[in-house]
Length: 221
Image (cartoon, one colour):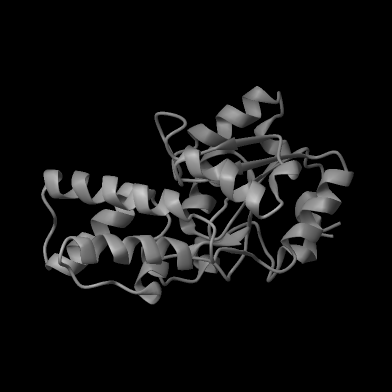
């Protein structure tokens, strides 16, 4: 096993950009929302740099881009409701699992490690996506961005799961693709591991100084 797993009992994974590439479906729903409001579509490339802080922030960034200014609250609320409805219709049409993910999850599950998902995506989308992609059987718990009063980079979701499973933070590992994952892990007292292929607002995740870095989660086995 990879050195990052030494003495680890619980592994928390980010979802979007770490386990799955969900941008194609997010971008499709977002562009349809923009077009419904008579605004120009953003396209996948821009959406890749906007993902990571939850759905509201994603829609806010898209509106600011399309309008050339910050949207007012009522416009943002309306666009967010529209976006969530459209995304709920097809959250997993073009979303794919990254190479090495299933092999890593299978090996970690065989070692009886506690496996969790901590994402800023709304909780309602997590179970359907994991089930569609055949990943649901690996996880003991999932937390979305709206599950608690705080989300990443706040450490609360990480502390919540460590406490729930009675595991010391020093025996937990946070795996993610962005600076928010690394910051949350560091603040929570978790060990941190990053993957470079996901979404990090156009910045290399290595700049956040994670404890470890792997090109593929397949390196964990």
